[in-house]
Length: 276
Image 1: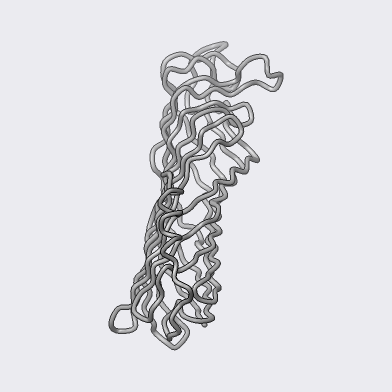
Image 2: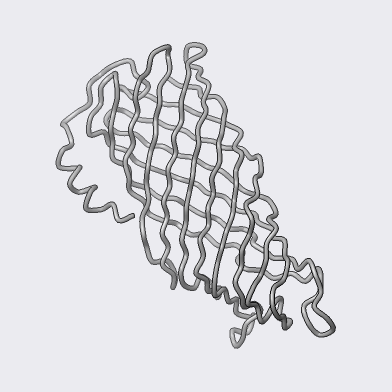
């Protein structure tokens, strides 16, 4: 996911200007899209430790595996540019609950626990992406461009709720453990984009981006790919179907929570695009 050397090499190949045309990426152009997104979220993490409010101990310690869960949410995106430059944005949310299991746990919600524990998660988060693109090649038939920007992860709430009791003095059913809340993690990303015009007023586009960074006291890696097909049904109106996948690795401490975790957001979407 270290794209910087490739970015520098490709930038040396940048042409002076784009070729005018009537493609969706030619000259002055813009679009707005809304879609229904079958957004799936899953997570696995080891060595998760959450400090208590005093900072002198821990409320939670254990490994966590959350099963994939899919929620139907709104996916919105927009583009505006004057070739060869383009600014794009995309945003999606996830507000759902996942079944899961805590293993190798010793504490949950400040109570002692042993062995494994069935839990449900309560997750409320959003992922926003802002990218500036510059075309290496632009023609009415296709374009190839470089991307640089940020994927912005906001976690408003990430709680675990115990689904069982382990006896007097130990964790009880209904106990709640907060893993993260009110966290904002901006992740700088670089990548590239390809768009191709196809017969019958259709086009296909895809982008790939990512980066490894240090945030707070954690190493964060992100890999984001998105591919979509557009079909013009009326002038300035297109149907859109696509698939987006975001894989994130977090190893270290963020605001008193330590973990080595893999998070995956992915799913298909379908909607409509209005373009100029």
